[in-house]
Amino acid sequence: MRAQFVLSEIGVGLRRNLTMTIAVVVSVALSLALAGASLLVRDQVNSMKDYWYDKVEVSIYFCTKADHTSPQCAAGAATDDQVAQVKTDLAKMALVQTYTFESSSEAYQHFKQSNPDNPLLAAVGPEAMPQSWRVKLNDPTKFDVVQSAFAGKPGVKSVEDQRKILENLFGLLRGLQTAAFVIMVLMLFVALLLIVNTVRVSAFSRRRETGIMRLVGASNFYVQMPFIAEAAFAALLGSALASGLLLGGHFFVQHWLAKKVAFITFIGLSSVLAVIPLLIVVGMLMAGIAAFFTLRKYLKV
Image 1 (tube, helix red, strand yellow):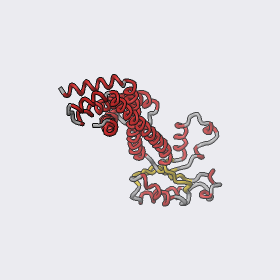
Image 2 (image 1 turned 30 degrees about the vertical axis):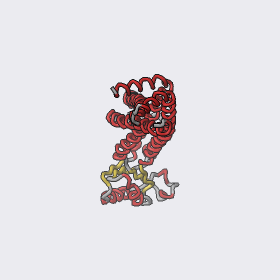
Image 3 (image 1 turned 90 degrees about the horizontal axis):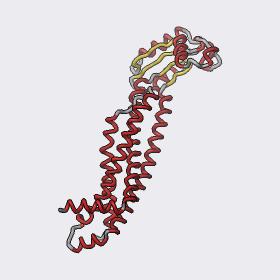
């Protein structure tokens, strides 16, 4: 009987404040969707770091004849002995996992394959491309050790870390994550205000019923429960909508974006499904707690 009464009161409250309930559902959905997106972007960045950092290489470039104007290449192009000495030093470093030599002709062919329409191809030949050692480290974060060991050595033009290229991409993704988090906080604040206002209006519109319930000895919990349940139910609908938005976003990424950006391995459906229960719990708790404290102030029980 009590459960039936509570459910009937929830239905009455939702119908009386339908417009505000819809506003609560939409604001909760948007804020939780942004929260979920922020978590998924974080997982995506971590996944990409694990994938790409495992493939990242340090490149040790040697001087060519065209580099004679550079201070580090004033002696001219690197000799075979200088190239061999770098190989010997690499073999002695425990930090180095593997190292592969790329000749000028191989570098030219790679550049040609990667940039078939580049006008520079008609103006330069293989001799313009530097020889290099492509070094893979056991710990890619220890680039400074390799740089300090080989930068300035005879015949070495530069030591470059491919992580710098990736950091720009990761920085962009982290910026998007931060922006999503800030917007999420603002939307959650708006949702809380709407929940508080909806509960206040609902309590005011049913002040006669709650007064009668107090007179007949109803407990505080029994009086407050319909209002708390209304807010939690609206948040549940918002959480469900947010979950649908995340699943829709995942479908878009996997079936369209992944085909356009083939070099990125996107996180799978399991990551999205892992976030959804958290969104539902957070949404309902947020609404329930907000309603509870609002009723303590505006519903004299």
